[in-house]
Image (tube, rainbow, N blue to C red; front, side):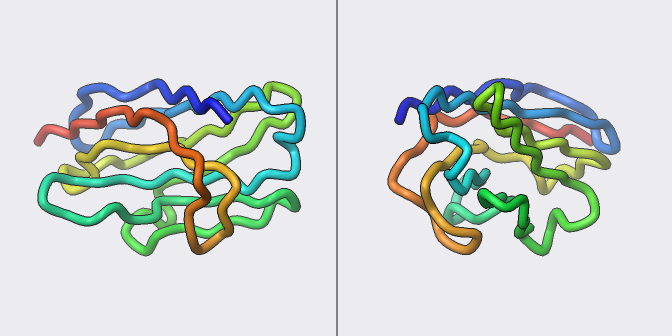
Length: 117
C-alpha cells in the first residue's frame, strides 16, 4: 500500500493545521489508519488511530486538540490539529493496517510539522 502524506508546514503556537494521507487501496475501508510522530531524539509515538468502525484512539498529549477522520470514498485519512504547541513539532507519519494501539507494516514518507512560539 502506497501512502502519500501531505499538509505539514510551519505554524505558530495556537494555530491549526490539517494533515492528509491518501491510501489508494481497493480495501481501504477495512483498514485501521493511524498517525504517528517522531520528534528529534524521541521514539515514534502514536498520535491518533481510527478503525473500520470509526472507533478512535488518541495519544495522551493530543487528546482534546487533535481529531482523526477517515473518508472512505476518497481513500484518505486526515489529522486535524488545533491549538498546536511547540512540543507538537515532529515528523508525522501515516500508517495503515495496524490496530488502534500498534502500527501496521505500511508507512508513509512523513511530513514535517514545525510549531514556533
